[in-house]
Image 1 (tube, rainbow, N blue to C red):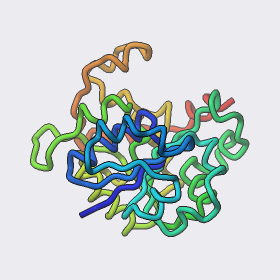
Image 2: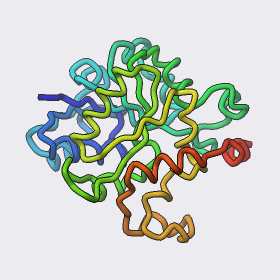
Image 3: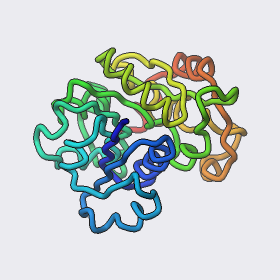
Image 4: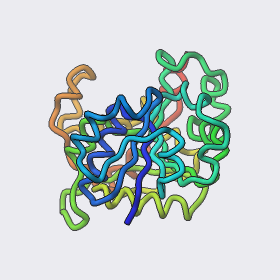
Length: 238
């Protein structure tokens, strides 16, 4: 039996929690406001879910999904996730996170920055290229013909294998997107980010969230990863 700690109760954290309880995982979900603010959510999730503190989610989870704004990562207690298997969903959005020089000039990727801030060696980047609404909509059983794939990136092969197993239980195939230095290939403004899961890629951005999602197999993800360039990403950050 797997217990999944989830730090962050926003759209993505909550969506992953719903898939986890549906997959017979126990969930401990936490946010910065305290367990008392999560009672409605855990009641909806059912008996496999508990609200906890950030420390409880980190300590009791066999793996921890980190789904908080990038700017909030330095506020986590030092060393909290240093020994955990971390599945991080974060992206850099300058309008929300402010200007971060290392990310603006591509000295590091978002994944490298977060890993360093956490001091985590078992760190995997995942769920950062798909909209929250599409997470439950696209999840499928392991033997489904229309199963969708998600890219995952990390520097520890064993951690990626363990994360891929958990993500498979949640309803998705995975594609190894390489190291954290290569993880920019699935960040905002790349071909892998969001749009690849839409049934109509011609839709304007403001209509994408309402579009019916399209299952996207692993070969399509690999092609989109290969097509990614840093030109648009760099332009977005200035």
